[in-house]
Length: 542
Image 1 (cartoon, one colour):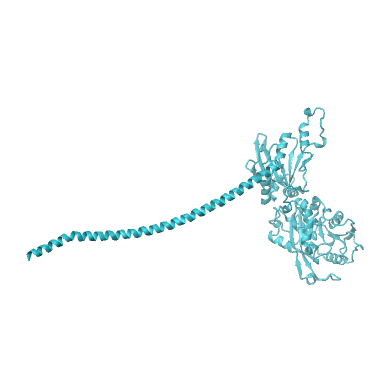
Image 2 (image 1 turned 135 degrees about the horizontal axis):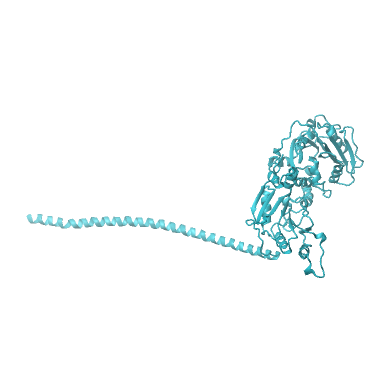
């Protein structure tokens, strides 16, 4: 079954299946014998076959030493790990585990009877899963003996609120292709053993955040993360995080930011370097000094700062001719080595092996230089669209296509788990994550780029741009003021025009009245002589 991104809905585990896989339940413990006894009693009631279950309790230096109670699964053993820390204890248990599935369980988490079965039905359906159960936090007093009805005794209990919110806002993690690993909670999570082997053990150097950091590496190894509400368990009391969340986050974030590039908000400093970069850029160092330098310098000058350049070449066998350096047959390699030997963001490597914890790998042919924002833009597209591969077409020659490749490490890891013997890996990546082609010219790639600005020049250019922006803002405000003034003037003109039209109308009426008066006077003037003549005639007759 091929899952795209983290959309585990493509996998349909059977309700009724024949258990075949062995599961190793690893419980790190430090003190708390009373709680451990309840946890082991809960495991003894599991419906998953006992002969397929081993339980490894790791006593992390308790005084007095912990012991195994009578009520525990038949294949339970205890080992001791003196190195302090839950991560070290889990690694000690992992080294002893022989199961097909590793089930992390804390020593204060009591599983319900069907919890392990709910985990294992998923693992029988696909070999690349990390399944997390649902914890409920109970404040009930500890019983001397585990009650038959866990729900009746431990309820009411509080849900694991942040997991519930994470699952709800991401459609059960099906639309969360960036950080599904956040679900990896060491208190109640099971993982395919092959994935654990590929990802490596827990980081014993971390003070806190080991679960999340390992979850991130599991994602990089190709894992699909599944929340399983039927795998229920009761946490005996609140966790340390619930009691001191802000303090826990403060300590955890100080360390995991170096190790989890996906936590972008912890990497906002523009010039810091990190243990695990966000992207590694691979460049063939044997292509000539000028070509290599054009490519590497353009990458280092770009807006994507969270990166490391890996220049691949025979550096371990390189010898320098100190008598006649200009005739040295390895002069080009010597120049590349000398130019970048002490650059902290460049690693000179003899192979193209990439740290599997690095989220992205950009394979860039020498002589092709990305524009200032090219790498950052490619990364943004791959991240937002969840793409597994972005091919950049740079040139087409008689020898074939010249291209750059931005690969998502987790997508290729998943593809390797799924690909058949004759199957093209890029085709499988397309199925599980997506593949696109883009034109190099539209992305800013070229064989030549402008000389990169020095930091002070860039700073001055930024100040100048800021001054120009402020000037434009002031000019814009001035123009808005002018527009307002013109609008006020126009309003006055419109008002005057209305008044003028009224005066003109009144004048027209007055003129019309005068014209009527003149016409009447004219008529009277024309009729007056006739009237006088009639009077004269009447007078003469008399």
